[in-house]
Amino acid sequence: MKNLLVLLLGSNEGDSLNNLNKARLLLQSTLGEIQISSSVYRTQAWGKTNQPDFLNQVVIMNYTGKANEALEVILTIESNLGRKRNEKWGPRVIDIDILYFGSKIYNSVELTVPHPALHVRRFTLVPLVEIIPEFIHPVLNKSQQQLLDVCTDTLEVTKLL
Image (tube, rainbow, N blue to C red):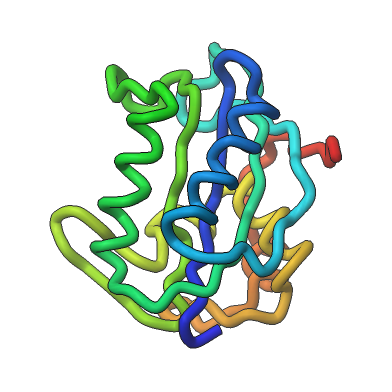
């Protein structure tokens, strides 16, 4: 997992499945090859629950650049696909979060890696457990499976594809 970039894709506006597909294509053409993709999951909205369900998927890419450079590319992809940042946890055409950057730890104003809330969100942990259940969170020192086993989030996460 040394140079692997682990991303969570999410969408609950428009044609969400198509939005995820477009995001994957743009990620591959800008950041590198996707090595592994989880299934696509239908998940209840987290944080602000009075909105449509999300489709979520985790992808793992080989990436040789820096985390902040990946973030810049990701923000451009989100913008190009129509993402508007109007409201925290609100509906969105596409959301791409950096979950892990190998086992590295980053803390800056723009970016915190590992993602600071991944361990409290079933919609993140379920697809992570599907593809990298034994990967150890570099801060919490627990595997993805261990994190899911103790996660108190009860929102429904259902495998779609």
